[in-house]
Length: 185
Ligand code: IMP
Ligand code: MG
Image (tube, rainbow, N blue to C red; front, side, top):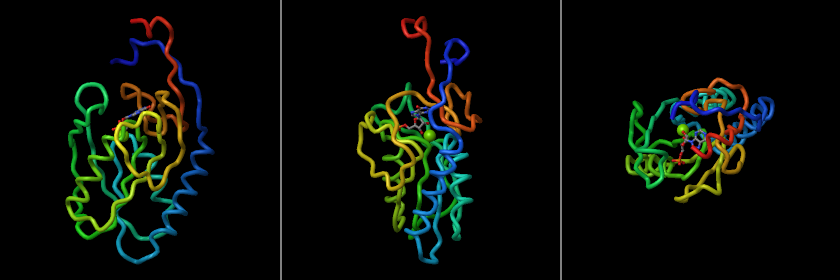
């Protein structure tokens, strides 16, 4: 669906200062949980987690390596669990501690799929960090070790998240509110 066909507005939900504060808290928790000198591999899920993983990793004061994974789903959303790999990671994760960083967990299928794949590849540990958790929308259980904010079922944009590829560059998280004509079409 093309955003320009649907009149809507974006209502601010989580402001930039609140995001920055929470990212700092998550980074501190992660630092505490990985005290060893072993290499931590941080893997961001493209494209939505790009700003989150950039801010988070710069706040983690310990050695780490950074890589990216990209998925897409069939049809509308990941409902049903058909998650496709669009871009695989380049680094080896065998025997490594992996921190998977995602923008939002909705049905849970995306993270569930990547988590299972990384475990299969022999990672020593895989933990999940998600900025936003749409808990009520979950279809498959995923253990989120580090969660930024729990939100409702609303469609959100900004700080990496998009609506038809728009709004990724908003510095805050907002809710997309549609007009009445559009809900009936
Ligand atoms: P899941 O596999 O259903 O958990 O879906 C996760 C992916 O769906 C996220 O990585 C987002 O790309 C996308 N997504 C889910 N909810 C939203 C939203 O409210 N705004 C923007 N993207 C979303
Ligand atoms: Mg995503």
